[in-house]
Length: 614
Image (cartoon, rainbow, N blue to C red; front, top):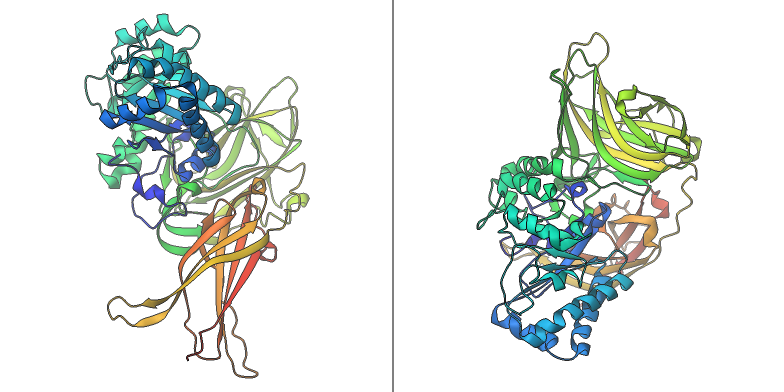
């Protein structure tokens, strides 16, 4: 998109308004980060966000024009050790940056020697990637023929079949018609799902669908049983009004929803505060902690199914879910749910997540929400359980049979004893007008399949419209209470750099700026991220002078590894005989998302003083 999503290059995030965001992860299986550089490594933020939502990520190898042809001849036209060396490096890059494979896009003609070596190159790359990267994928783009000619076919056929046979999948060009799909059925054998029929969302060329008619493309692709490759869905951001981005994004994907099977969450703990990795402010458990725009793709959390759902029949009931940056419980956004409950129905429910999780003997669930206005609507979590023959559930009541074994857990007034250290209040008001509901479910042999939120109207109530924000959903194994987390150890400060801070308009010195690198030791499997804070104080030189109280910890940012770079942190300039102190605090955020007491955070202290004048 316009040379790339340039705001995503900052690994620790940046301050930007109206950035691009993708959040319909449950509708896709593979995310290809594409650009016209020869080797495109997906920015780590996209990889983190995709993996959090169960989606694999591919980088791109592309060669184009005269220079691309020369590069291909250099590694494909010679001996096997040459193309194997390139493949080995591609595998190492994917391993190091922890993404899942490559789209191979050769868009230049090849000599007979080079095109002859391309299938063994693909086979070698695919086999090595499968060995080194579990679940790895190599896809080939429809471009070059077995003759070496660059000629897009818009289908899989005898002229390009050898490349398909040498890797995991084939991505067709976009100018196909239904006749192309019909012809391909005779080529694919048992590998229909490995053919990704290309759809240019910009609708350039002689294409079917595209833009808000992309559903027409998907309808034909699904009719013939193929997979789909949606190219440049950022069209809704690039070409339409930025102020309407979320509305247009939701409209685009809702039109495709019928043709896109939902993939499921398959492990616990499962926690999300619906944060998009962006927002006009940062909020920490209902309390505002920083004001100003921010964008950090790694901070995007697991996203729900988005869309509008109508009540069956002609009752007029409906529920609509959408992302909302105006308020948040934790992070930068929440999930806004609007709806209408018709008098003859009494309640409406919306499915938020699909799961496929063997449920532990005791399951703890929590819902944080906020109702807008003077509403008397009741809000509750509901869930469906599978594997019914052996499934026995306690602590919940079944709804009617038409709801496919949907169950409603009974809310708790206090948290389970084993979780009292981690869970503060249940059913009580929280900061910012939020409310928390807690549930505990006991079961044997069950499979958790779906999470719903239900809105019900008390008998006799005349109000049928409601507006609700969801701030967090938490699903945790309560049969084995959270073990004591490992200590966060060995916080070090290195690469320290000082400079004078000046007022640009006046050129006068106003203090100091500190840049440094923090590093610590911690098992990443226990944490979803780390929150980095600082405290600054100045100690006087006079005997008996009282040391001022340290300031409240200030959030600097988030880290998703054991490293964080502090940049241009403002600290006080000191007079003679004074000593300054900066405490850096590293707060681990466990995957269950319970708060870790400050006494258990990691800490490093930096002492500084002004040099004596000569």
